[in-house]
Length: 266
Figure 1: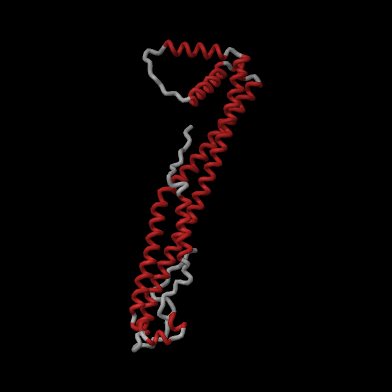
Figure 2 (figure 1 turned 60 degrees about the vertical axis):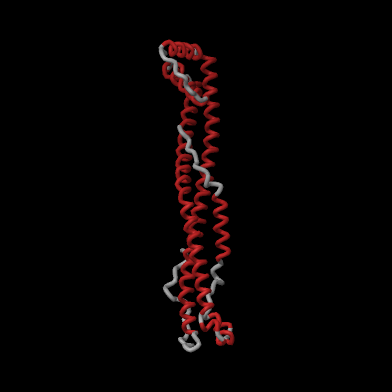
């Protein structure tokens, strides 16, 4: 649970004495600014804690996405090995290479317009993989052999695993991307709340310094406890500590700020 806002003038009240010395007015002024200062402190600390929690969540999501990415790479390697084994077996035990050649030549004959295409190596591999599976579909007597069945089952499993890992990765990436636009707003809000605190502290300190009691002889002769009745108390606010925490969070976020994680396509 976050820091609670203090009701107006909830700070410790003292006997309303010191009308002539101006002490009563100084206490009233102190309580008024102390309450606003406490509320401003609570707002800033809550914002810092909120950003800290969100940043931890972002780091967890990012690390999860990177773990899925490594799993995808492992599955892709396994996929290449499985298709390579299938291709070698098809070439060795069937007329797959001749079938592929005939299919290529037939494709060339029907082309009437030459189109320059930018085909990636990965696309070429995909076409080759699809051709292997098409070949087996056309020759069920070959595909039903146990040696080929074992390979195709392995391929089907690795394809399923790869799709699942990519879905998980895409989900983690989408979640990480959803965090990023918010940080600019969150950091701005935290800076505004820190600025508001400093402004209240500066204004309150100045007005209290100008109060008749604080400038007079009665304050100088008073005990330390009495003196503190007309001074703002920031001892427990630890604003310097939380300001540094905010700066650390900003620095840590630079690792993610320039990034818009790219989702894998499949």
